[in-house]
Amino acid sequence: MASPSAAEPITDLYGFQTKATVQQQAVRQMADGASRFSEAAWLSYVQQNKLPPEGKLKEMVRKGVPPTLRSWVWMEVSGAAAKKAAVGSNYFSNMALAGEKSQWLKDIDKEPGDSLLAAVSSH
Image (tube, rainbow, N blue to C red; front, top):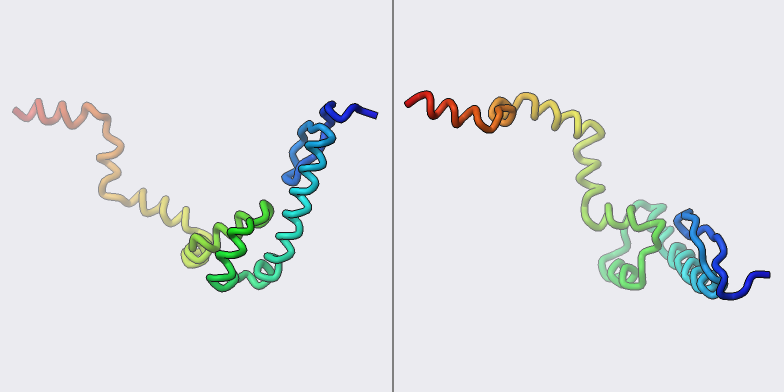
């Protein structure tokens, strides 16, 4: 059996391999357990794909958002999920095409000295 101060390999909540002493492992397991408990409170909202009412949301966020749900909560709270849904799946392609048609594209592609040489030669 390893001594309590010897670090042993473990896998954390995110799936990363790390080393921790027995005491650190116990603390990590408590934190992971609290995260799983907190996750249960959020799951009904995730399944409905809808955030809790504002007062409840503030309370739940202050108690902590489980790491596994942070990306979903952030996308919903920030409004990014609604914007992403509104523009559709080909947003990047549309922006790339719009850039190709830009009247400013030829100016952007110029070398920095081109406009200076043109100005000097016109005098």
